Image (cartoon, rainbow, N blue to C red; front, side):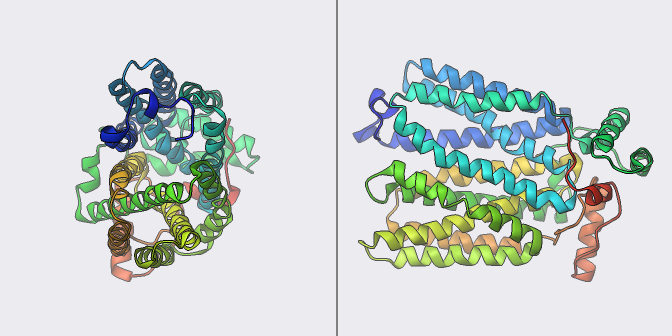
Length: 433
């Protein structure tokens, strides 16, 4: 660590206590995991917008409380609670966004989300370099969260969540507002048609839970596939970040450069998600990760730039893979459990993040052998998922069952159904305030 005043020096987590630094990283990821799981449940029960405010409160309150931590145990506890808020913010806004745009805009909004991550990971090393006191750095993390809070005040509830949970009048007012703002022709009749089409369909009569994802073999198989792949992609990503930071002598510069090199992924993510089928993408993304892991395992010491190049290739592939998985899981599960499916998948991804610091302590060769085996297992699990590219989002579990049956019988991609999101398809991204 280069900071003049950091947690390592202040709480003496060095020498025999060096393991505590890995424990701290794992506690952070465990908080993200719990936040993903708990807040995704709550957002499916009580709405997306309300839970965003709860997550923001967790982030602000416990990040500021960290400043007054009397010992390292308090650091661990408060880090866990603050990370819970961050975990909820990883999936709830995404589910809300996916439910507010048409199929043609999913790739665009997802790549915009990735742009925020890339900018953050690029400028964070600058903050750590300039702010030499970890407490000032902690305060700086609260600023962006307050901006998010201000923006969320102007956000409306997810229209799909309102309809799926029987809040028809609230949904009608919101859809009329959206139609007027987007200047959709004859939007009043279109809104009424959407709501009439929902009147005879399945609505939520009980609180959804993760058990609902495993009530049938077909749904449980999809959930297991996403859980394994999310864990593999995040384990690869964080293992490679730790490796890149450790290469050379300047961790700030390494992390800054690796963040900037992710910028080309934005157009790549958009084009691939827009143009290529989901199953084809899995092959194209797992293959370079596998080859890079094998190359790193066989590379002799001293080839720093080759090691950096292979690590970046694998990191790029795992980053795009994660984006693909987030989009695909939202496309496979219905509105009433969508945030739950995304959240539980992100929860399982944190298992990979928790393990990553300890895998990074292995010998270089064995670390990359483990990564190669995990890449192969991830690809095999991807083969059980249905093709959903350019299809409209399902609203009920019945629609998901029908889609899976169609995929099983025909082994071809079914045509998108003409339902609620067909209006979104024609109008593109819907503006809300």
